Each structure stands twice: as structure tokens, then as C-alpha cells.
Amino acid sequence: MSHLPQPDVLNLGVSGFTYADLYQPDRLRDLHDVFLRDLEQAEPDLRRIWDEYRQAPDAPRPATEVSLLYVRMAPYVSRFVARLFGVEAALAAVAAATRAQDDLFRFKVDFVRRRVLPLLKGGAAVALGDNDERRVRQLLAGQFPSDGEMAVARAGCLLLDREASAARSDDKAEQATVAEAIDALKRWCAVHMHDPEQRAWVVFRVPGNVDYFNLVKVEHRRAGLPTAIEGPADHLRMRDGFT
Image 1 (cartoon, helix red, strand yellow):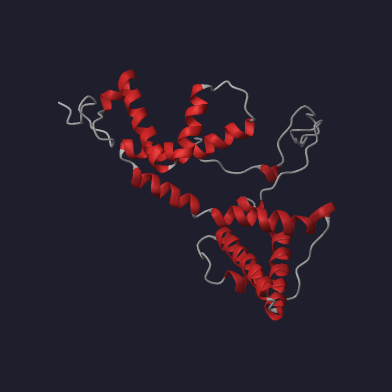
Image 2 (tube, rainbow, N blue to C red):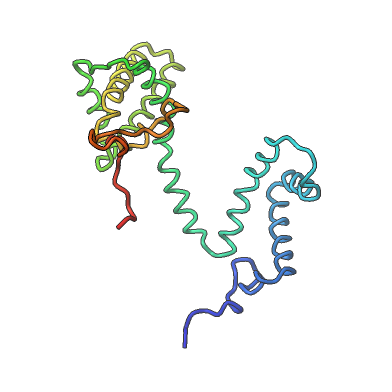
């Protein structure tokens, strides 16, 4: 005999409800009412706006208004579902792991896209300065030694914060020091972003130009078989999950 809990007696994280209630329309309505009461206590205005939307979902509204409403509701739905199934700890762990990646995406947008890519515009060649490698090693010292990508991203974000702080304080010496470090890191990124070692880095993956008459890049490597085509070798990467 199985010792697993039976669905009809498994209690949920919301008092008064069991797993079996999830299959009963009337009980689902009751559960939804609990959610709405929680929303009312947390954010009355949002509850009012949500009720107006539910009563007339097809009424003409700007698409941005509906999208914003969904975005505002999402955290409340997420927390309620986590509480319902008792997975708050797992949800918090996922959220923490996601927030831990913030530096990667901030660095990609605020540093790589806005400061590094302009150096490469038009296929321009970028060379490292005499002290660039040394400066970058100093920036990376103590930053995530087991993850080179995160180390670079974190160092870059710290530089951006220092730059903003120096600008507010009008500290000329600090501004000059930070500017030199940023320039060194910009050149380092421009030189290394296509290296095989950094090819898989998320921060260096940026959209390319779109040729609508050549959307899929192919190579003809067999002169004796012109119909044989392959993808560019530098786009190939190992994938998990294929045997």
C-alpha cells in the first residue's frame, strides 16, 4: 500500500482548503475570493482596478494599460500560489538565484552595449593599451574567481557606480582614475568578446545585423557537392540533453 498522502486529504497552505478542492469549481471560486481579500488588504487600488477589468475584460483599453495591470498583479499571484502549495522557500531560492544574475544583465546593457560596441562600429580594430591587462586584472582581483564572466560584470558595475559617485562629488582625481579604468575595461572587452574562451558569455551575445535575404547563414565547404551546406563553425556550441 502506498504511503503517499491522498489528494482528498492533503491540506493546502490556505486555511480551510484541501487538494481535492482544486477540482471543484465552487471551491475554486472560494479560493479566488480569498486571494482577492488578500489583494484588498495589500493594495486596495489595485483590487479595484482588477475588478473593473474582470467585469469588462473586452472593453476598449490601451494595450499598455492591460500589460501593466498584468505585471502589477503577477507578484501577488506568484506569492499566493507559493503559499497555496507550501513552496515559499523554493520560490525565495529561485528569486535569490535570479537576483544574483543582475550584474550580468546590467553590465551587458549599460557597459557592453553602450560603451564597448561603439568602439567596434564599422568593423574598427581595437588594440589594448600598454597597461590595460594589468588594470583589468586589478579590477577582477577578488571578484568571483570561479566565474570569469561574473567577475568582469561585477567589476564593470562597480566601476559604473564609482563613476556616478565621483560625478556627484566633483572629485577630479577620482573621476580621472575611474575614467582610465573604464577605458581599459572597454578595450579589454572589445578585444576579447569574440575569443573562443568568452564565446559562451551572455554579456557578449548581442544582436547582429539582419539581412532579410540571408536570414540563415550557411557555408559551402564541399566544392564537389555545392548543395551541401553547414552552419558557421563559430556559431556551433555544445548542448546538454542530446545523446
